[in-house]
Length: 169
Image 1 (cartoon, one colour):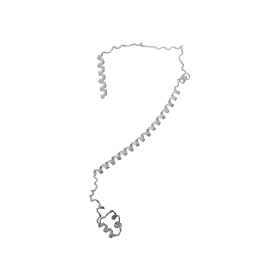
Image 2 (cartoon, helix red, strand yellow):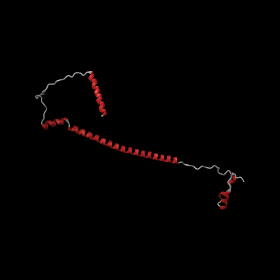
Image 3 (cartoon, one colour):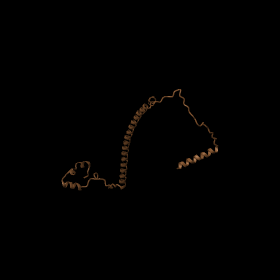
Image 4 (cartoon, one colour):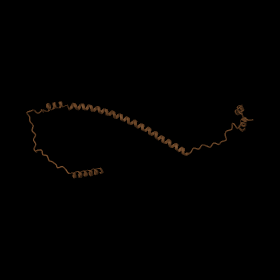
């Protein structure tokens, strides 16, 4: 008897739980259509190099992830520090404005003049007061001769040499 789709559909022996029927069904050969292909599958071999490569890649990815997290953390710390420094700068700028206003108040020329006249007793010079400046030595001018072209060349070389010596020190 050749098994066809119709006959296989009505073969209930496969689902029978009686032990003798089960044993007979196991011993009976399957029809050619139902037999599995006769190819022998080779066992899948995983080489050690793949495992090493995978491990190395996992370590590299872990290092990269840790680096990224650290850099984000550092950026956050620096931005917090930057905002603190900006607030300090604005505080110092406000303090500068206050101190400048106090300085202008303290060094008001009209107040200083009033203090000098009233407290210290000084007064401005009148037209009847004359002040003389006495010079013990008269002014003199000494004229230097213009240096020649040779001295310019020599002084230029000397300056260049001194510059090289200073650079080397």
